[in-house]
Image (cartoon, rainbow, N blue to C red):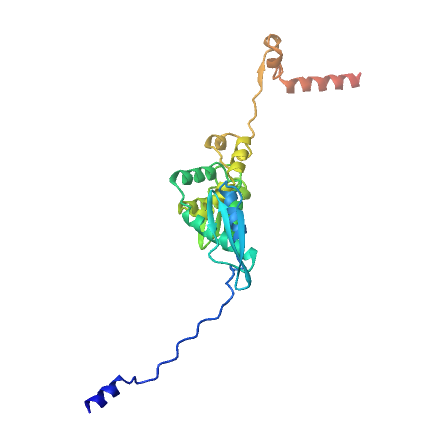
Length: 285
């Protein structure tokens, strides 16, 4: 009986499932075709003043199938594709993906670079709207929308204050004498706010505009408009220089410049009346 019970206990309650068959050889997956990593990597090298990527692709036969593995060199470093591919361009895209993801992750914005980027934006506002637009395109965000208000002030010129709505946040700039400059100043507030988070994409966009900003600033074209001083606001816009009447004798001793703004002391109205009476007497004769 004991032997029978032991034998029954040794029998499993259910028949074990058959072992899974070995998976058949499947073609290697290809990189996401919606993302062109080669283009992204090339743009990264241009923004960071690096040489263009150089690819080296090797091929070999495996089970009667030709496979490719690619290596790309960027900034003195080499990155290899994660796997073999059946097509050369897929191997290069895979290598570019590995390089791009690694380099972007390693990119750390130092305090000096951050200060330099903020300094470029503070130099002027000419490129701020285009910088914010480019950032929206690259981050696939909705384009910024601008609104401007006309405000009355002490200045004889009209003043505009603009706000920009971007990524759910509203940024308001300083006053300017024209709507275009007001929008640029609002965009500058948005750009500086994003730079404050040390956003890598925004930092790279600003850095790519460095030479243009410096060139425009040095030419004097990038000087901001719309800053009206209190002194200019209080100055009369149509001041009239008073004419001083002096005796004829004194007028003879004046210089040419002084005499040009002075007339004899004799009453001009009296002279006009006297001339009119002479004409009447002449007619009577």
